[in-house]
Length: 338
Image (cartoon, rainbow, N blue to C red; front, side, top):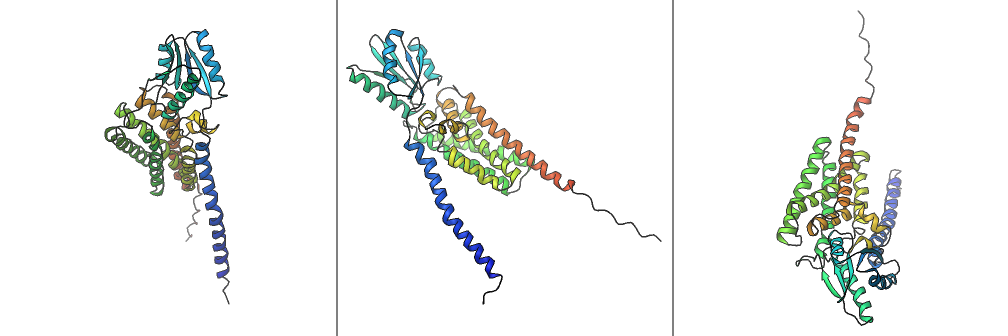
């Protein structure tokens, strides 16, 4: 006959079996939703696009663009110089300039090769239907070693993994307080230097200031690692899984690194820019290709993640150090008399 102690073990094994059978398909479904759904619904949504030239001449262009319901957010400029400056400042992804010689399309493939191609197709096809030709000028071209932006987009996941690994290592090695902060910052700096050496010096996919790019890599890594270690310091090892879930299943597919945030379904395009992978990719583009234009927003997002994470690390350490002292001291027995 089976012993009484065997019954709980069988019951526990049965629960574990059911959990695995149900949990794994649920995670697979969630991963497919997070990664495949945005990719399958990629399309322009309020994509910033400039129109330049006399009002009488640009009216027809605006009417043509309005046919793409909700696709473009029109910005009006007086002339080509103003439109070109807006493209270089990352205010718009491109601009249609009406000139006496015919329409001209300004693009910036460095901002997003996918968007530059989409604009070229949308504008030139409409012009071809009317019997006119459009001259395309790539104002800020993508680097020759990464013309489609695939390598830059692929850099998002390794940085996220490195940040999660650093944060988990600090937690599992039980580093606390200042030591944990120093370990996280030191690892982020080294990762930033190595990443810049690979992406800029070796692969040649980045063309901006080397140290600024290294700083972006380091700050992106620190934003993730500090969040992992910080939440783990407050709630325990479960914080590692929670932050890793947010970064991997939300931050990575919602980053828009391979296209643009405005090409993703709402609200995930906006959400992605609030998370380290999306903010890191946007900041890296600004620093590497646009001389820092439009860098303030993503830099502030990453800084907040890093600051809050490091603050949580210090807070968690302080709370744990106070726990023993909060316990009442044992009463001493009175010494025997005599």
